[in-house]
Image (cartoon, rainbow, N blue to C red):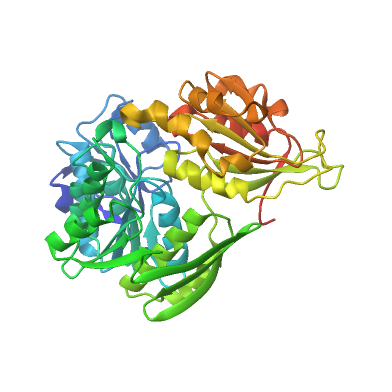
Amino acid sequence: MTPLWTSADAVAATGGLTTKDWNAQGVSIDTRTLQPGDLFVALTDVRDGHDFVAQALEKGAAAALVTHRPDGVAEDAPLLIVADVLEALGALGIAARARTKAQIAAITGSVGKTSTKEMLRAVLMRQGKCHAAEASYNNHWGVPLTLARMPADTDYAVIEIGMSNPGEITPLSQMTRPHVAMVTTVAAAHLASFESLAGIAVEKACIMDGLEPGGIAVLNGDIETSPVLQNHAKMLGVSQVLFGQAGPDWTIKDVRITGDVTVIKTTGADTDYLFKLSVPGRHFAMNAVGVLAVVDALGADPIAASLDIADWVPPAGRGAREVIVTDMANDGESLELLDDAFNANPTSLAASLEVLAASKPSDNVGRIIKGRRVAILGDMLELGDAEVEMHRDMAKNPHLQKLDLIHCAGPLMQHLWAALPEEKQGQWAQTAAELVAKAPRLVDAGDVVLVKGSKGSKVSLIVDAIRKLGHRRSQEQ
């Protein structure tokens, strides 16, 4: 098997010093998931990765990328010694990018980055060897790590790039050097670090700064800040492809949410498409059309992609649907769980509420007889000075009016809860953890339950508590 990294290649990339020859088949930053043969990268975050080098080597790491030999590590241990571990990881990423002939897409956006990355991976892997991060690795260490893990013989790569502060996207785009750069959308996220939506759009537009010569920008044509993105592309002399209802290059003609699927009509690349997603959601439909535009821009086959995209399902915490069987002895005694607990802002919450409002609860299977549409919502974080108003105003959302019950957790969500009509008010608690013990009383068999909030709100604890009410199975089983 051809190694991902030889010690000689790693030394050439980083300028480091190796203590002996070694070959690595992977790159790891976490001893909990490290596989034998990985190069362990001793990054410093909450803990200093050097504290785990001995453990990594015991688990079979091929070598460790370090600034020094840590205490307790044998003098003859395989080490690649560098001045700065994070900079060296970046150098590995740059070298990995330089040695591949892969067609590379970079994706950013306030909402939908990871889901879109996974959609694109799902369709491109049917058309060649596709590389993408297994998680949401989109920051200053996640992007170089994803690149450093890319095999040289990759055909397509999908790199997710995120930000929380100004100036973060450009260097990551320049490291990635994509052939196609996509912006899913621009929404009120990380407003605490930006003055306005326009400011967020300016930063998102920087995904184009690293485009290869002849590169293409695939941009959302429907959002109010689309002109900001388009102007940045014009300034760089980059070709643009616009998708959305306003198109005009990939134009959404119709989106229909029926039960558990979304049916989409679109026109792009002089072809009419009618395809489906195996999950409901207008926001998923928008991103799916953007994915077809990216596939076409990469030189792959969008027609095949439109067929294959039906096999994609959302990752856990990002709209994944599960059936929780609450009583195996009684046929149909179950509830449906929409796990969207990884992130939240007003745009993504509105999209999730639309999905919940279109769902069909089951009657005559639970204690309450009538099945309900139930939302359990945690705080939306990093929204800046208008955070209270943004939470309170969600009570006016038209899709929320179709729900039967809303439970809320967190001091910000209290403002939404207080603005609800009394018949829709469920439980409110200061923290998500306080709702966990109440899980059996929050939901019932027959319900369709959405759990959504920013990761920091810890509403994922409620997802786990609901799962423990019964026997979990995925929607497609």
